[in-house]
Length: 238
Image (cartoon, rainbow, N blue to C red; front, side, top):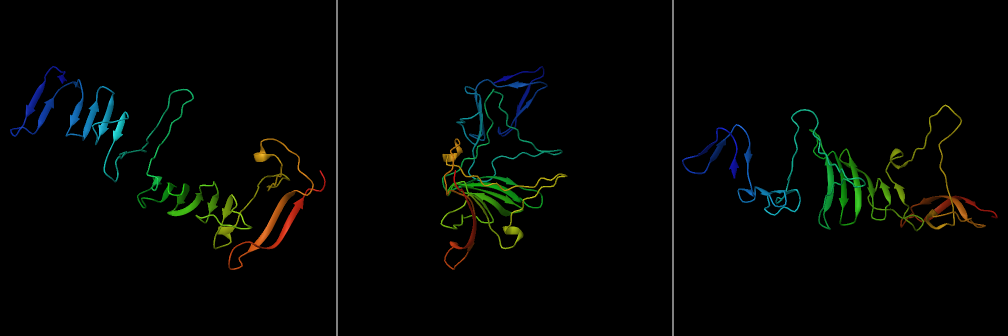
């Protein structure tokens, strides 16, 4: 390596285990740098830095056996980890890669609780769960069903609806639609029927098509498929 400065000083301890470099300016090292085998490694050919590895495949790669591998601490103010992409049309990603039976997660903690909030992707069943106040708040399963109050899709009328809200109390199992405005308009719940597949276009409905179906189902001790009554709106003519 090359040492630059006007008053260069290199000292070693009597045991030969310590190297002290005292310089007024900079230290320039030409070539690779290895510290304690793989504690820190600089690949000068590919301009990469490895921590815990001597063969980094990214500009910065940190390897370890388990536990916390990276920590950022702000002594004052906020701690921010920023990922930018400066190329037009390109994206910035945070990539958490796990085994096909493990979890990928972003955990939110504070001084009172280390995991008060969490976003977890379970690779064993391909579900995404949001946790607030240490409790599961919402799960999106592998079929893109949104589940609130349950982590497993429930079946009623022989199907598993895309949106499910379940709970043990009235507030936990209810949906509120409201509009606060100084006018005559209300909130809305719209039902749409089309014969166009996936709403890719507009195809007219046919006589007898159901447009609205609101039904009440009760648990008969076996399932939730027993209907007590229904409100049905159908097309009369075309």
